[in-house]
Image: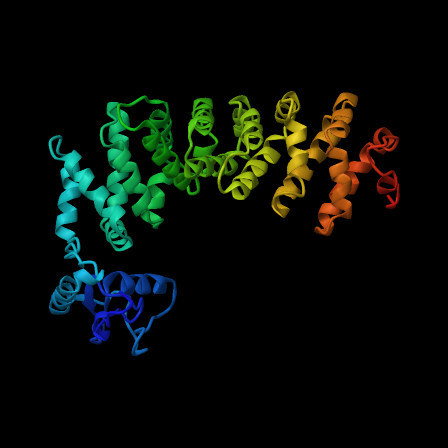
Length: 412
C-alpha cells in the first residue's frame, strides 16, 4: 500500500487517512465525517471553534453535507487497486433522523414492536458518539427510565439489558434529567430488583449494565434517597462484586459504595453485607488488571468502613487483614499509602489489644510504618507514621524487628 500514490483529495485534512464518509462543511472544505464530528465535539467546551484548514469560524452545529461524488470516486479507486492491498470503502449508513428516532421511542409502548425498537436504538447508541448525542437531545434517556420503571412494576425483564445500555450511553445530566432521578427512590428499588433477578439473558451483561447506571444516578440522587437505601441493596452489590469479572462493573460498584458510605447508617449496612471481608479477599487474590486504580478504590472504601468499630472488627477478624494493608503500603500509590496509614492509625488508636499490636509487629506492619518515615514521600504521611509509632512505642520498642531510633529520634 505504501507504493501506491493516493490522490491528495481522497485524504481527510484532519486524520490524513482515506475518507470513508466524506462530508463538506458550510465553508466548502471536505472532511471524513468521523474526524470533523470529533473535532466539533471536542470544541463543545470551548466558546467557539474554527475550521481546521481555513481557521475561519465554524459553528459547532454546522450542517455537514455528504459528498456523494467524492465518496463514489474513492470507492471506485479502492476497487481498482484492490489487488495492491487497498480495502474497499463500504457505503456509509445514513445518519439517523429525528422522525425515525421519535418513532422508535413511541414504539416502546407497543407490546409487539418494543423489542425491535430497543435493538435498533441499542445499535445506534453503540455505533458512534454523534448518534448518542442526537439520541440524548431527543430524550432517549428519559424514555429508557420510564421503560425500566415499567419493567420493574410489571416484573418483566425483557429488553432490560438494551434499555440500561442505551440509558448509560445517552445520559446527559441536564436539569430535567437530574430531576427524574433526584428524588426517585423507585429507580434504586428497580436496580436492586434487577440485581436480584435471575434471567434467561446473559446475566452478567444485564447486571454489569445495571451497576454502570447505578453509579451514574448515585452521583445526582438526593441525600434523602441515598439515606433510605435498604440492606438488600448493599447485599446484592457485594454479591455482584464477588461474582463479576468485569473491571468496569467492579469499579462502578466500588465508586457507588464510596459515594453512599458516609450517609445515614449506610456504613453499617455495607459492613453487615460482608464488604470488608470481600475487599480484603480481592486484594489478596491479586489477579486484576488495572490493579492500581482498583486498589485505590478498595482502600478508600476500607478506610471509611474502618472508621466504625464493626468495620475494624471485621478487618481484624480476617487472618490476612492487617498483613494485606501493610503489604500495600509504599507499593501502589500515594493515595493508597494515605488510606493504608489511616486504617492502621484507626486500629492502633481504637482497637489496639495486645494481640492486635503483636500481630502488627509479626506481619511487618510496624516495620512498614517505620519505612514510611525513611521513604521519599509526603511529609504528612511521615507525620501519620510517627503518630502511630508513638501510640504504642512501649510495646514495639523492645522488638528486634525494628530500629529503636525510628521510634525515639523524633520529639513528641
